[in-house]
Amino acid sequence: MWIVQVICIVTLVTTINSSDITTAVFGNVLDGMPAAFGDFDSDELTDVFMVRKDGKTVQVFLAAEQEPLLRPDDNLKCTFEEPVTSVVPGDFDGDVFMDILVTTTNSTTKLTDVYILWGGNKDSVVQLNCTTRPLLSMQGQPLALDYNQDMIIDLFGMDENYNRTFWIFTENRGKYDTKQMSHKDHRKMEPISHPHSNAFLDLNNDFLPDLVVTTKKSFEVWRGEEDGFTFEKEFDLPHNAEVIGQTLYLDVELTGKADLLLPLCYDKAKHTNCTIMMYSKGWHDLQINFRDKSNTWAFVKGDGQRYTDTITLRGGDFNMDGYPDLLATLESTSTKQRQSFLLENVACNSCNGFNRTFDIRWQALNPFYNETVMAVFYDFYQDGILDVILVELDKINKVYRTAAFKNSLDYDANFVKVMVLTGRNNSMYPISPGSLGKKKRTYGTNLPGPSIAYKTTTQDGYPRNAIAAQLSQSAYFSLNLPYTTFGLGRTPNFVDSLTIGVGGKSREWPQIIPNSQMVVIPNPISRPYKWKAQLFVTPSKLILLSAAALSGTCSLISLIIVLLYWKERREDKIEKLQEAHRFPFDAM
Image (tube, helix red, strand yellow):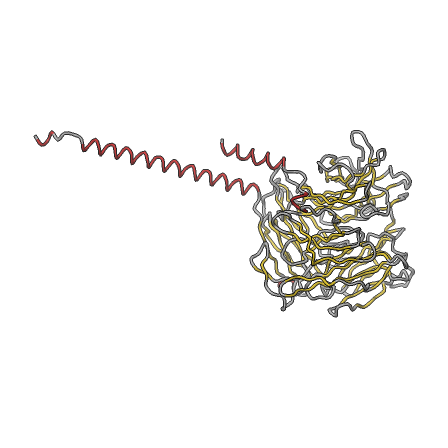
């Protein structure tokens, strides 16, 4: 009976803990605006790159295991003359240390100026070298990718003359080669749309990431090859769409392939007729219901402000059921109130050509109601459960404020969390303590493009497989996480296999323990059998409850044994006293 009471109490506490944890996460520093994620100091905790001070300062908030969980480091910040338009962490010189690419818009030329803040290490302390001189200028914002599989981050975008260009970086810091994209038949190419949602991910399961280029008319797919990209196909935008948002690539139906999700609106003026389209052998309208009990909502009309300049969806498995969910910012068509909502991935039995859609959970992010302009998934407690960072806007004072929402599931769910690094190493880097392992060397930083796939069996005995792309997009505050979290629902079984594909090579790991966090180090890239994987297991609630119940049972049994032993000793003592006072009749 007491075991049941313990379980009920734990469940109650878990349910009521879903709330505002802003102070526990940020302390009293609430003016930061999330721009990117990455492990800057190589401590195995994901740090947040924030934009502060009227949008002109980039500062690293280092993650910690004690409150506050995100702490601004005054030695890791740089200020620019113009507002920051994007932030991309990565290794741009191959020295293992994370650098930070920052873009601003030049007020005179209207070009995008690209700066790289070089990271370093001195006496086991990470450093950041600020600069006021742009490394290059371009049209629009760049996409981070690895062009030549050397694990050094490169860029793709349009140069000053609107030519599609790759900027290929080397180990020589600050130096790069340029290569223009071209068709084999030398036909003219359409300009990249502005803003664009170009992506770098594997679409044909050959483990080489492909390149998706967005234009004003269509999406172009360029097949990834060892020496570049070759045009493969294109497909037109949905018919009659007037406002096109940013694409997002998710395995919506758990079919083992990434689907393209596209938020859009059919009326440019009022934004009252909006939906999400999915491309899977053709366009499918997911038929999202944007009406709650009293209002009709729609995607926010682009207003030139940070986060709301374009329609952006952000994906992650919020309820750990295996199907990826969405976060989106909507606006009431009547009151003009803005709010970020959770869109849960649900079954659709009446849909034609697809079997999943998204249902808006109007109360899922309570108590955050008014004027939240952005929401993104983030794992605050490193426990595999995705929480949410939100940004609120004070319309009167035009001030942004960050907030944090803790996601506490009311049931025990399993997961697998995977992060693929560049695999580069530096013999000069000292061994340092980590949060998950005892001691470690750094094995690289954020790597765009790897494919991560798993196969398992559900509790009902049905096979399940899913795939995800790591850091497939980087421009316009896409805020992709540097890791992938697969929810496994209540399936406690081992994951049958986990396959990692990097640079045209792949390796499969069998029998992965659920509730584990896996860091994959693809080094050397040409020999997958030598790739390393560090596995860290996070105990689930059920295991902890079982351990508590077992400990309680053992304690109760021990107490009963002690009481019985004490009772027997007491009875023996009384019996001996009685024996001593008995008259010896035999002696007469």
